[in-house]
Image (cartoon, rainbow, N blue to C red; front, side, top):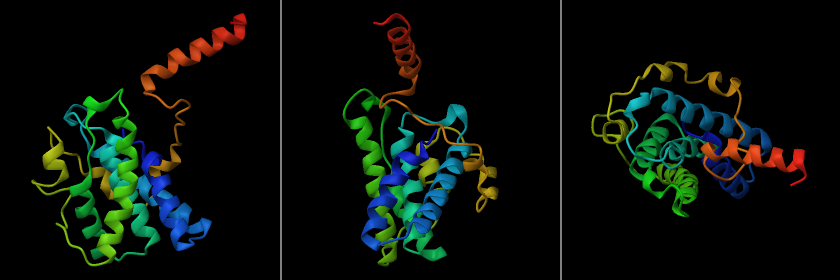
Length: 190
């Protein structure tokens, strides 16, 4: 759940290029965005997700944190950026199988850059955009979140468990079938 890299990398590459950010800053921004996305994802109960696309929704938060790190936003600006991101997070499951599904991820990257830059410029939002009853969790979850993963913020626990590489640009459920066809092609000269 979350696919942190899908929105974080495009966001930090675009913003990092415009800032002339060194690789070390890009890497630190990536880690921050990955960890926040993972912690949000782990806070969501398995049966409490609703019908939204995680790369578009959670990806917006990860991209926002990454961009906030690149822009060196302070804590108050980061809270505003996350509130702005909560207003922008979107993506619906009914678009799976259409061109709009991957659009969610691109919008998440764009939203992260926009939210961080708006916060940097003084734009305001609720500082509880994620956790308030009327915030992201209240609007998008059907069950209350488990906030315990957030106690690990500042640690690289999730990234240390490794990154799963998505080898094919399609839904993960199709990957085994693709592997099987490629194996048959190789094994049987098809």
